[in-house]
Length: 215
Image 1: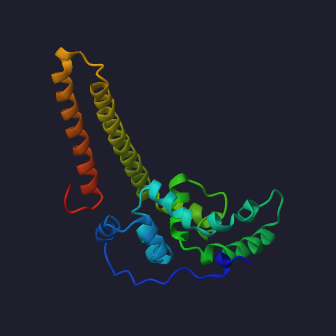
Image 2 (image 1 turned 90 degrees about the vertical axis):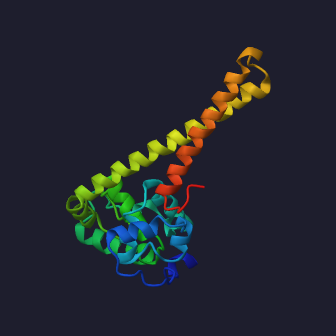
Image 3 (image 1 turned 120 degrees about the horizontal axis):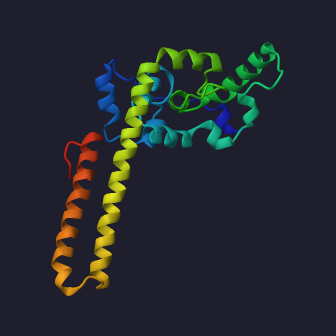
């Protein structure tokens, strides 16, 4: 049997009893997703509190540390077969949870991503479909806000990408000499403005991500 299926999630220090704001600030610190996963901070109750503060790309990044990513188990293990008796399915999914989800170092991230995606068809993060569905309904307002923040973060990222591309476009024009001599000063000014815009967006992102300085 693969070692990933028998190992326990990594031990970690107890997360202090904090409010949601404090947990959000903790998640926004310099800790990387890889460090959170390796430190065992994405399992159990505390893991769910942390996972709900992550953005969708971070949750997907965390899944690279999952048992499923490491050993690629049979997908059918996580879904009820057509016509399969409920009792048989419960026994089979119990085995799946025990051999995969209960030893996964990012099970909380897996469950949170399923809720963000509205995916309640199979076992995700150790939760059976009916438990996922109950959480989906119970946490609907929170999940709606989380999805809105995901969309906002994606939009800001796209703006940063576009700003950086504009700097490169203008700089290539200048270096290639494709700008007429009488327009080169305006080209330099445009490059400077594009750099300032790019740096402003990066600085805003760094502050939003928890950096103390927008350097």
